[in-house]
Amino acid sequence: MAAVPPQIFAIDLGTSGMKAALVAADGTVTGWAERPVPLRVLPGGGAEQDPHAWWAALGEVAADLGRAHPEQLRAVTAVCASTQGEGTIAVDAAGEPLTPCISWLDMRGAPHLRRQFGGFPAYQGMSVRRIARWLRLTGGMPSPTGKDPAAHMLFVRDTMPQVYARTATFLNVLDWINLKLTGRTVATVDSILTSWVTDNRRPGDIRYSPALVADCGIGPDKLPPIVACTEVIGTLTPDAATHLGLPEMVQVVAGAIDNTAAAIGAGTTGDNDPHLYVGTSSWIAAHVPRKKTDVAAGIASVPCAIGDRYLMTALQATAGANLTWLRDKVVEYDDPLLSAGHVSRDEGTIFDAFDTIIPTVPPGANGVLYTPWLYGERAPVDDSNLRAGFLNISLDTNRSDLLRAVFEGVAFNTRWLAGAVDRFLGAPVTSLAITGGGALSDSWCQIFADVLGVQIRRDAQPLAVNVRGAGWIGAVGTGLLSFADIPDLMRTDRIFTPNPAHRATYDEIFDVYRALHRRLAPVYRRLNRPPSGS
Image 1 (tube, rainbow, N blue to C red):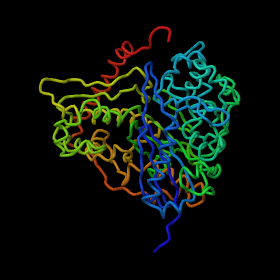
Image 2: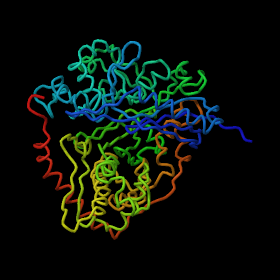
Image 3: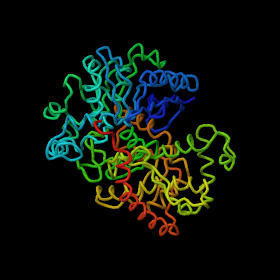
Image 4: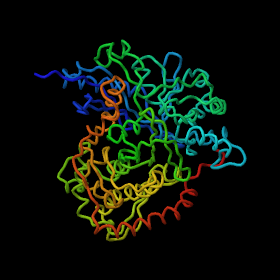
């Protein structure tokens, strides 16, 4: 029997739950285990998760992998994580959480951000002078929605002063996992980004900017040291080794947040080679050689796992979350809609039913349009007030029409974003790798091809993109391969090409979609503006 090659224990902690797999340097993913982790949505724009629940779930998935694949687990030489980004946890001197994780969906810090960074003249409540400095040094700026750590930390400082006083360090999601694995407190070049306190002008030398740190309103001693994504930050602590069922000598590579890891796991490590990730949220991303920012579209190139490159990321707030909403809030467990696909309500199988139904509805969903802004939007507009909606419903409309409209609405939003991406890259994208859970749907992949008018190349294992990315980052960090090797290791299972017969229909609907945003944005602003004084 051939010897098992070295394995990376790859962690993928998303908003919906904890996943892990065993990944070889050639990209082979062995095993797959996952556990859900709840998200608490709170009044006033709050969204939180329990870090202890993450850690408990990690132990459970590690045990699952050990039972199913003992030989591969014994071959593990390193651990590397990919996690959701833009979360914030206040930890004490012992590394214990003082707060739940304030999620990337949490908007409660927005007014605190405006108070900290206001001034005249101002843009979206923040001083234009400060914005100019952020753009020059970091490539971006805090989201006015309050959805990133810059605002989360101020929210803790202003509303929980006793917690703030006890806080030794503010950590992003990845940083806390690494602390639990190694006992070492660090941030990666990408996990620290949305604290908006780093000088990112030299990709191989990301460091804190004294001016930005002094202005951020958070004590500099509460910010962790910065390391590269590929740095070996230590070995497993005795407790972590026991928790994972691995030897203490196993190395831990710093890893990356999800969009950084997905750009590696999608095999798109070459310059200007984009991928579309469709998960709870979605994004278009590509590695680029230069730091650049499109202020109007909310797109920037930022530090990433490849030390001499930046990652252009254009993020949309909700994509697959629209289907989850449809599944959980509209379709019941005994719904006749499910019988169309002859499936049960088991997790994931409902999307097989959706795939059976969608081709029965013509492109354009019999006139129904859907805007997928369930929780605001990030790009190509940054507007927390936007909300989802069905339009042009008639007495003839049925739920199959609504279903196709949801799939198409996400694709129209992606087309809107893709126009900004084309301008950013300096040339139209003609071929796009697709990955993430949404890529499992043949119908959705074809809709993306038709709406965007580009070739869609599907990842052969789209659900594994983040663990594969974490595995490859871990493999690069421990010397098993280089980033230049990765495109040749990538596997595509199908290519979807645009159907010319659908082009005119989708072009006309897209024009209407853009007009809907222009007309509805002021309405949503009136409906969803925060109460006076907040």
